[in-house]
Structures are given as structure tokens and as C-alpha cells.
Image (tube, rainbow, N blue to C red; front, side, top):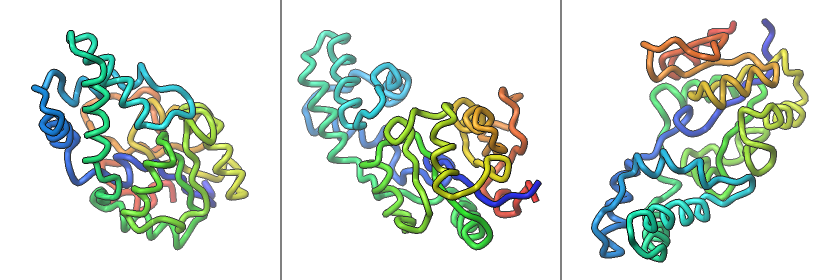
Length: 223
């Protein structure tokens, strides 16, 4: 296939936080003076219940933590206070490239039109891009849930490709999520490259290309 554009997911594809979220949550509990009554895995599991299109992640977190507090017989204000402490402690610029991601990104910049399609709010994702030194280096960043519906809706991909002036059959999208990245790319008619975090599973949907690290992306498996 002929490829003119490469779209990247951001979180857990290009980058990851340097500090685990569990450590940040532990500090938030300490700062509020509350005994831990939920784990970070509970937060991640429940997060989707509180997300609405256009929401700021800080508001989503407040609603989530407040509800969990209520369910544990505590005042919702305690949950909101923990959410505020979490936000204050979580440095969104304190991120790092996944192994091989920086090399892959630089190579794609040299050879293709490049954009980012991410399910994350602009306040948060812009800081991550700044922390990686990528701010202003891609031609377009589309935030699912804000500029367009969340992936796997095809609209974020359409918007990115419109901005790049590239047809969908001449683009690839690289991401780590089968549910949002691979399915979204397929919905948009874009070739999918799945960054596989679990080589033992049979993916559904099935991506056109399956890579085990971003080092493989630098080798352009579609070429």
C-alpha cells in the first residue's frame, strides 16, 4: 500500500507517565488525611461511567471519586478533595517515550504527514506533548470527546486526515487499544497498526499489522 500519513495515539502508544498513578493516589490520600478506601484499579474500572463528551478530566475525576466515597459511606466532599489533591500531585508533563517511540516518531516525521488522534482532553494532552518536546511538531492533534466524538467513532480520524489533506486509504493509525484504536481505524477505513501489549491473545478486531514494540513501527511494517 502507498502511505502518505501516519496517525498516532498518545497514551501508552507514544508515552507513559514516569510516576505510577497508584503512587499519586496514595499521596493524595495522605494529603487529605484519609485512609485509602479504593485502589487506582477501581478508579480506572469506574472512570468510563462518569465520562461525557467535552468533559475536563478533572471534573470526571471529581465525580468518580465523590461517588466512590459515597458508596463507602463517606462524605462526597472527601472524594472531591482527594481528586483535587490527585490533580495537584499529577504532573502531566512528567511523561516519557515508550521504548522505541521517539525513534519511530522522528522517522515518521521525516517520511510522512503526521498527526495525533487521542481520547484525552486538550488541557491534559497538551501538557504531555510539551513534556515530550512534541508541542507544535505535528500538523494536527484531534482530541476525541472534544474536537469530535471519542474513538472508535470514525470522526476523529476523518478530522485528522482532512487537516492533513490525505485520503483514508493512504493512512495508517498506530495505537495500543483494540477497542478504540483498531476498531476506530477500521470504522474510518484507515489501516490499523496495533501495539500489542499481550501477545497471547487473539485480537478482536484483527489489526492489519501487529507489533510488539514501537521499535517495530520504526521499521514501517506496512512498507
